Image 1: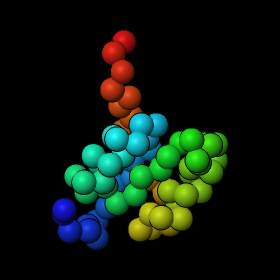
Image 2: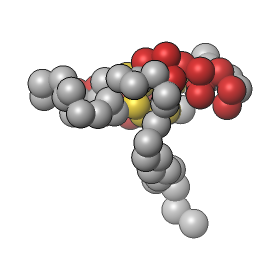
Image 3: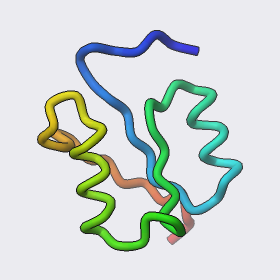
Length: 68
């Protein structure tokens, strides 16, 4: 497992628990189950709460992994 960075925090939202386990093993700092944190507003609040700055994400990268 990687050491916690003081520069960034990596958050991953997920639908499939097996993918969450994989990204945690790769070093994600926090995973957010969208079936438990249902609204975008709740997710934003959680990311702000858990982020190092308290302001939330500086960069967002969306990749669903689903074929088009």
